[in-house]
Each structure stands twice: as structure tokens, then as C-alpha cells.
Length: 442
Image (cartoon, rainbow, N blue to C red; front, side):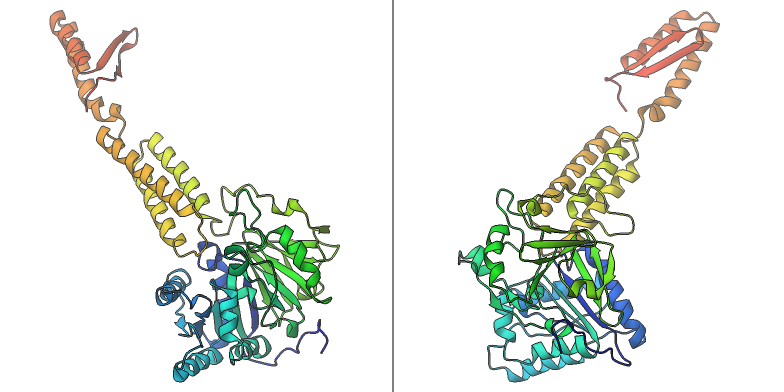
């Protein structure tokens, strides 16, 4: 089989689906793609889908059990699917029964998911075990493999040792990956977080490697290997039976070879052969990589129609505007709804592993909205004219009656008492009008 060939399509059984996400695997942005994959599997299974979370990439963390439970909870709440936890945080221990039980779960699963953590840790735990073969079997025989972030890094021919380079200061180098994708005609290095810009004043794109260091490493790749970059909160859903690739989420994917790149944006569906051939001149056009690739995009204020919100910041911005409009219209119910919606958004985005300072900023917005709502409650959200109107109109009617009876002292007393209460009465040819002064009390 040549490097770019694709295995024959199975005659029956589960569809063969590969989903690679750059990040956002447990954020609102990816709810739609997750549902899409589960629904496609459910057509073949009759409804139920045997789903397993492979917890190895973050297995080195002390709170691995909490992280796994939190991820499983996301799929229950956001996707309405039960996901079992493999319980394979690591394999470098003597619990043979536990390891074999976890591997059996993965083999039997219709859907296997792995996400953030350390790619090199995951590779150390998986290499020499049946795990790579069990994952590869899904792509060969049927099932869905959904890998994001650190787990996505392990799929290709080579892997970026992110922690070692970005956090520990090692000189850039490649680590051998699982190379599960060459068998389906994708001899690639998968780079998630491709458009990352957390660095602000320094380049953290290309999964924190940056363009300069990627340019140094790229010539070391085999001649047949190219880069598949996946932006944050973005994924590519590859249907190996239908031979299609659909880009979903917020950004796009990049096919790159020798510093020449082709972009495929979210919403585009291309043939799988388009991915297999790497950078090409058609579509958006192949262009040399440069510092321009690292220029931050203007944040989306609103999600495109039909797509989940692209970020917590976008949610907060939109809901603050709704809150401002509600207060201006003295609509207490709408103001409360905006506060509650932002609280719900914070909970939803709280499951996302890539938050930066968005969570802090959203909480600041929420606190500000609550304080302003409290101040509005103290002074009264309703229009004062609605509250005072019946009383003032009754007083003015009494004043008219007093004047008609030539009881001018009574008429003047009514006017003066209203003025003392902060209500200014103005006599006009059309009758008495009134306005509320700052001293009016409700």
C-alpha cells in the first residue's frame, strides 16, 4: 500500500470517522460536531453508542480522576451521551488486570475520545502496548476516533514535545508519534492550537512552538510528510467511507509543506483526497508561511448563524449589551435574564481546558452586572412616571377643580406640595404638564 492510498471501505458495520480538534473539545463550540459524530454512529448502532474516554494524556496530573469525571460530565450535559472512562491514566505500573480491562473497553467502544495533557507522556504510556493498534482498528474496521489537543499531536509521524520545549526550554526537536494516519493516506504531523496567540508579545502559534522554531524543524521531516495544522476551537471531521473532510468550528485547518501553506476554512467540505495531497494551489491558494500567519484576528463579537458561540468573551460582550439595553428600557426581567445567561455561559465554558484570562474577564462582567442590577433595584427599575403617574394626575385633577371653584390658595398649595416632593408642574395652554426632578422620592 502506498503512503497516499486509502484502505477499502468495509462492506457493513460502523462508519469510519476520524475527528481531529485543535482545542475546545469540551467547550460550547464543539457541541455540534460531537453531536454530529454520535448521531452518525447511532444510525448504525440503533441508537446507543458505546463511548470511552481515554484519560492517558492527563494521567500524570494529581487530579486525573477529577479531570476525567469533568470531561465525562460535559458529554452528558452538553451532548446527552454517556461516556465511560477507560481508567488508563498510565501503564507504567503493575496493575495488569486494570490495564487489560481498560484496553478491552477501548477495543469494544464505538467511539474513543482523548484530549488535553502531555503528548510525550501519552506516547510513553501507549508505546509498546496494544493501545495504538486498538485505535487504528477503528479507522480500519469501523468506529470513531476523536482526538484533540495533546492527543491529536500523537496521531502523526512526529510529535512536538510541547512541555519540554515551551515550558522547560529544550531546543526544538521532533518525537516519534503513533503514525496512525499514514495507513489512511495522511503522512502528516498534526499540530493543534495552530493559531494560538496567548503569548501576546511573542509568537505562541503552531502549538506554542512559534513560526521561527517551526521553520527550523520543518526541514527535518521525511520527504513525504507534511503538516496538518488545526486552529483552536476548530476541528476536521473526516469520513473515511464517504471520502469527505468537513472543517467545523471557529477557524480553519492548514496544510503545509516546506513553509508553503493552504488554508481550508470552517464550513468547507472537501474531498479526502484534498487533504491527502497536502498544500495545493487551488482553493484558498498556497502561500509561503510568514509572520503574517501569526497576526491575531479580530475577536468575533458574535457567532455565525447556526454555530455555537465562538468564545466566552463573545458571550460576555453580547450579554453585557443585552443587559445595558434592558436597563435602558427599564426591563427588569430582561436584565435578570442577561445576568443568568452569562452565569450559564461561565459554567459551560468552565469545562473548556483552554481559557486564558477569558474566565476572569467574564466573572468581572458578571459581578459588574449584578452590582448595577442591585443599584437599579434600590432606586427602582420601573419608570418613575409609571409609579407616580396615578398619584400626580389625581393631585392635578384636584388642582383643576380648586381653580374652577376659585379656591386659588388650595390650587397653589397642591402645586407647592408637589414641588416639595420633586414634581414640577408646568401650566400650558393645553393644560398642566409635569416632570420629575432629581429630588423626587419613590
